[in-house]
Length: 470
Ligand SMILES: Cc1cc2nc3c(=O)[nH]c(=O)nc-3n(C[C@H](O)[C@H](O)[C@H](O)COP(=O)(O)OP(=O)(O)OC[C@H]3O[C@@H](n4cnc5c(N)ncnc54)[C@H](O)[C@@H]3O)c2cc1C
Image 1 (cartoon, rainbow, N blue to C red):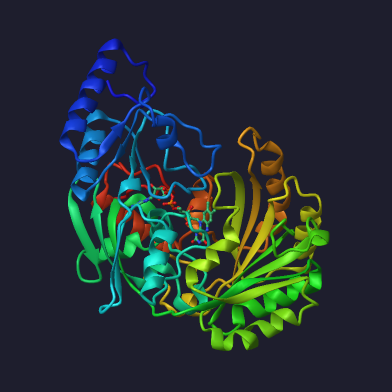
Image 2 (cartoon, rainbow, N blue to C red):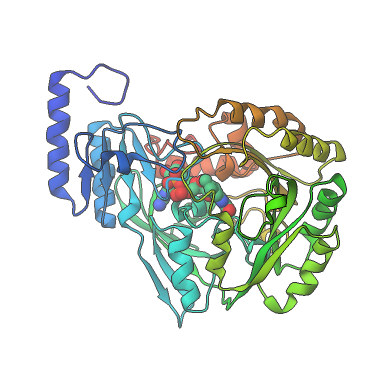
């Protein structure tokens, strides 16, 4: 009998799984943490505290061979397999009840090749793990907006970061991966080696195996000009932002948030709690910053204008709140146009926000993202002008989150009607139609056939799952 398949464990199976875990412990360099051990609660925690689950065991591998051994162990014991990179999956896919979690937290090394402008990054590294050493050598790769987000999930889903309009998606700088496949084999994939797998892993998520090492090329970026411009949250200001953001110079990437002004040091006390459009900006060439930001500053007299030149990792200061463990509810969509009534609905819903941390997030896309051929990678929605996300967020772990989830659901139909397609990395567990809408019909079929080759038994299914098809 297999554990994790809904049957009652018997004494015999309990004993045999314990024996198997002991043997597995002895076979790897990394550690295996089980429920009776100190450290289990820390090890099973993921970023969103509402995904509070109790795996059978958590393995923290030290090497690619450990990862391969862990995959073979989970299969031989019939344990469902969850893979944890940075633990930020919005659906909580990096943990599961009665499963083996392969937690890559000990595999976060980053090696910078300054001459070759390349980085070798282990599969458990976060955005901050890469950004610091890269900046110290005069490079910056656009990954996500938050320091703690894992590159394991972010990159395999695409990666829409602070310099996305200049650099494209993170996958557009991925040159090769080392992976452990469902059979426990270690393989390399690049444009020349297993090109089908390399295509699929650039947008198809964790469906095809566990990436233990990414190889990126690194764009040279000395300093960026970044910060936040807060404007009154009116329909005209939001409309002005939407018109400018996707057609600004590619040096400028923005993330705008309709939100309550936070109690940050740079926000005057009298403004805290007021509804604003907070436009977080990142200009990858400080020399063009004034010109690039002028149209945003012209939308209305800024309530806050806190922008300056800094090394790229300084951008993460803007997302210190989401970098804390929290509970979140999210609905998101790509869009090409957003109607006035939708903007009005966003502002009205924000006026009755269930939490001070809720926001409607608007990202202007285009630029280098859209210049890559649509079929070149599995990520399908390169031509979208906007990414829109309705985000409910709470910081109190005892809050069950119900009012915030409901708050998101109330606004969602109005936002969804303007959209088409979704970013796989911004999905919760929302069902097959939504999951498929992350891809074009052609890309989805191709992903299914690559899945059939590399994971025909769907071992890697705790993810935005793409079922194998013959
Ligand atoms: C606060 C916050 C901010 C975010 N900001 C951005 C942003 O600016 N841009 C953006 O593009 N996305 C952003 N995201 C979304 C983010 O990209 C996804 O949540 C992503 O899946 C997180 O990756 P992770 O490794 O931290 O998550 P995990 O929960 O560890 O993993 C997520 C999925 O990826 C799989 N996976 C993890 N590691 C590997 C690996 N090494 N090999 C194969 N599969 C793996 C897991 O099995 C799981 O299915 C944000 C999310 C949060 C919570």
